[in-house]
Image (cartoon, rainbow, N blue to C red; front, side, top):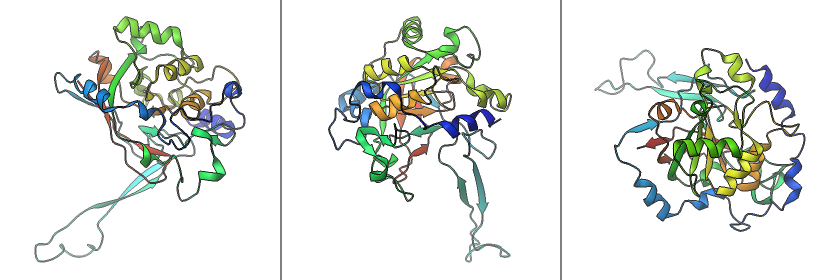
Length: 311
């Protein structure tokens, strides 16, 4: 199931984005010391306004369960081991015979539902706000742009139901969402994309896990280059989808992971992968309060997440 992804992985960062030289993307509009990018859009006033979207109190878990069989971008993998430290051969600890389980995780952070931080993907070894790889990356953790720097994401969430837009259960791989598709889907749903939003696409792709893993891993529908420029121009905080990479694959051109570069490196816009959007789509929950407090792994590149949508 991973063969197609391996081909992408092996070549992923061999070339820079052709549009990168068109502007000085290495300088953040929030200043030379900025490390949080589009999270700067989340003002207290915006949070208060987003909280007003809660009318019913219904909550939606957007993260998926993760185990050793969860498909992941190669060579990533994951496993959990449950242990009972110091309890072998005894009925319990102390006179009250207390027993407990602990767990050990072995694996990669970028498995399942995940947040891509700003130190994840760059252009010719240069990352968000002009940070050069040799200056901030270290095997023990990033010295800048670490996942612990990302503030709590509390803002308005917008779901774009692309499966409904295309009148299908699962949008075909290679289908790109660009300006026309995004604007038409939003108009059909009666929603407007605003500065500070988190925009999430529903494609039905996540439903393939466990049913057609080979197809799930071989490509995906997703955000196109012009669509990425459109959303970053709107000032969104993050873009997510119920797919493993958010951007369309096969790619629209010979450029590899160009959408990742536009979002992360050029604009500081976060990426949310493998979001469970099915229930939101069923309920036609097109706008909601989006809440995310990710594990703050110091120096981390990514984080496993379970965001919550509240209506």
